[in-house]
Length: 199
Image (cartoon, rainbow, N blue to C red; front, side):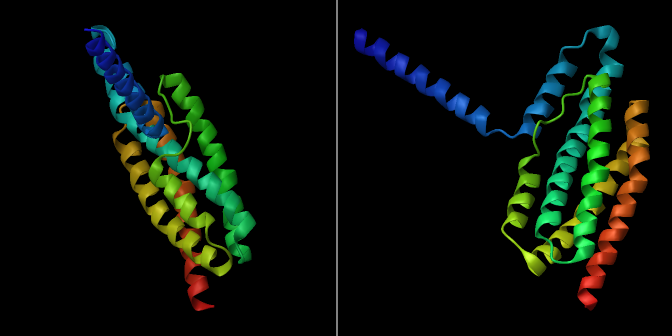
């Protein structure tokens, strides 16, 4: 009987250890999404329809936008340190300035709407940072501007959908207000990328 109790205790301890490790490895965006889902599930009947739509749909946009915004700031700082091309350095400065402002506005909005945002960028965004951190000079410049063109294509698509389809008027307004800045970034990134091809 004592051996059986000891075996059960070891099994439970191993299971708890595994659960803790799984939780630790889970990325911040996944934890934020789960928190927003729990909030939506816990709403009472009177608030459920209106608030659940915000927490389920608009929160998903906010989580993705927050993760992407953190990546833009971190890569912008990296570009100011590692870039060889003066236009790439200046683009990095613009990314830090504009995305820090948008990130702060998003944090304020999320706090008002009870939306949980990630505390760090998601795994996909982190991989981009790690890849670019290993490059320098002209290699960094090319890889960074390639990513900025592609990433801003995705950002514009994400923000257009939110500007058109968000359930919450304030979330919709934030997306619409941010779109012109993202389009400006996209055009600048394409121009710099094309200029580097021709030089």
